Length: 116
Image (cartoon, rainbow, N blue to C red; front, side, top):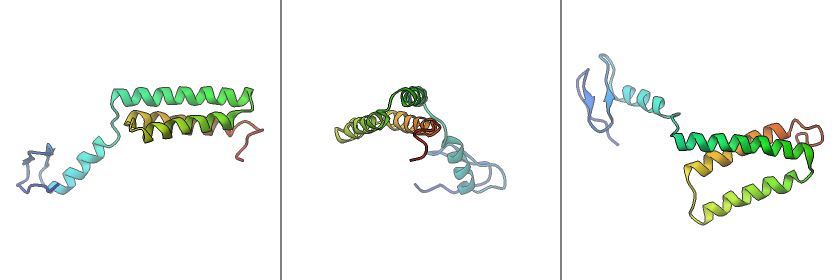
């Protein structure tokens, strides 16, 4: 996307970038995109929340039962099947990523599992 040139104080029509006096459009565009980069929709936040809750449940299962490798592979196979069937979304990615991160980080704290 090309940025439109203008004078200081101008507003780019298609990007809604407000240019402060003394800045060029590219600097303002980069700062605007950095501000928007980490905003999650409420549905994606809910997916991250449920992924974290599932990761904590996985940690409990690792502590109480030895079939943790089966479960982590089954969840990964489910996510992979959803991708192959074309049912992938940002919610699936957020939920699986947060589950895998939280679950693995907590599971490695169990002495029997360790980092192996």
